[in-house]
Length: 247
Image (cartoon, rainbow, N blue to C red; front, side, top):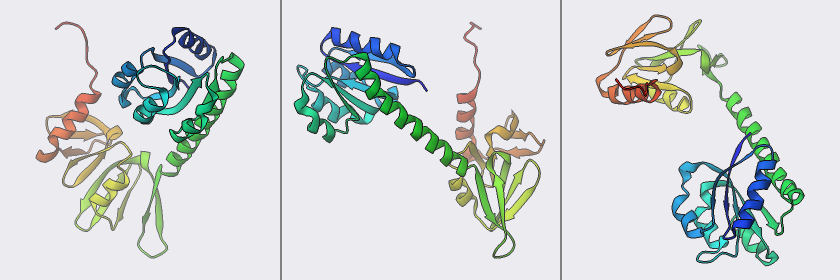
């Protein structure tokens, strides 16, 4: 676990205290610091993928409560660091996770952040468990109580067959009464790509691309459809290893 932290405080000394504490705490790293709340407002973006935002409240221009209303969604956790106990209720309104009163000793800091680290660890475990639960698909068989369990990472590709689909895995194939659109939606959070009107391919199953032909790891070949070329080759380019050497 390595959580990215941003510190916002108009006093440089307060920033230094917090950055020292962050450096001492396993699992945390300083990403950015700001002495100007206005600069923080304009420069922090959701793409920064911030985990913990440490923020003073009593600051010139924009106070921490006002700032939090505008940037709270850009960080996973919010910790107010202030010398004023009176703002605690307002801090709760902007979804503060911790409220640390200055002066902030390392012991006080560690206890407050440890609660966040435990919450994050539990969240990661829950996400991992959910991913594990969705790592397989059940499809209906040839009668009411017949079902097949297919491991998603075993699937090579899926082919449309009129009102049915055929799911080809590394060891066998399954035919079930579904549309390609329905299976595509079920797999949208997994690494698959639609390559023509009739085929969805596992990205990990692609062995080679030659022009408009995809060769899979089982040596089967599938043609890339005209309407799917742009999306497919955009994916290839995004995964392409490139040299920085001058040609």
